Image 1: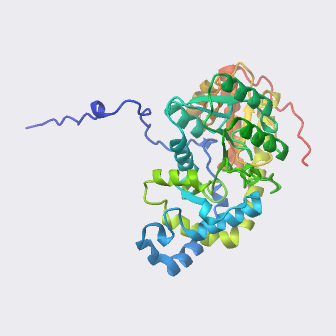
Image 2: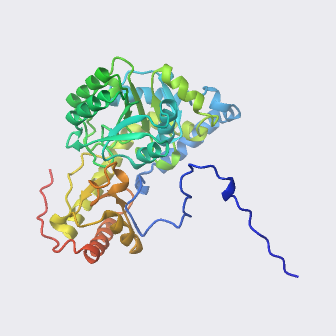
Length: 415
């Protein structure tokens, strides 16, 4: 006798407002230019292995205590390393007590948002911006005001106009979100003079700054302006960072630097009993002796891949692909001709084994980013970059007639 079992239906139990269901994982595309993945060859496996063995033998028994006996803000040796690193690299003068360890910068975004935002609030962000930031704000029902960028990052004239317009309407934004150092996706670096302008506007209109420095370690020459947090004298800047791009994204370790008045609120919302302890222990053990030498080596590898990508785009797309050469990071923001629909190109390319990020998903102005694409060059090999861009060009030509000609750009002199 055959019996049939009816699957339990969860649909009637789901509350309203949930995001769309996730698709099942089917693996990476053959040529994957998406996400913030790193170069596998640049992960310091031997160093992390040695660090794991050393710290576990020395302190492994502290795993018996939530927070490793360092308290809810995270493993004290790691917070101490971060404080020293921020002082050296970003000119931020803070102590371990000013730092909260979180599970990647995404948790940092969530904690800041849930501490400050309610449905109907207004925030100011860069027009072209990190997709994770945009999606979170959209799900929270927050009004987003996008500020255009130029070669130096967020434009202060446009920001001043937006702040004044909002003030005239009786609206005080909850924060100004910016990725000032190797912006995502444009890779711009805001100069120190503009950072001072931003702080002045923040003070004039009483709006705090939310500074995301997730990519700041990956600058080719290692030279960066001081963090906005370092230039602030009033406690009006919340600063976040991550080890995802400098060491490895799967470790899921980030941090927040903020005044206790707001950090104490975020800490009350961090109800996960602490971020991953092993990751924190291993990072602290590895980074103290090795971080300063590891990062320049990693950035040299990334710079070489960027060169391969730019050469491949010039060879395959010619002048049809417009981009500015980044000073660091893992992304290239590319503008294709106006008749190219990036969302349709993304779908057609994926069928051909090439994954790219369509520009409209990385902008609050979908029309502006209609023909833009974001290419992550960190993960694929040099050969995969060349082959993948060739396939992408074939797909783009078939779908949109672009490019009509290829290899029509002379190789640029390398400085």
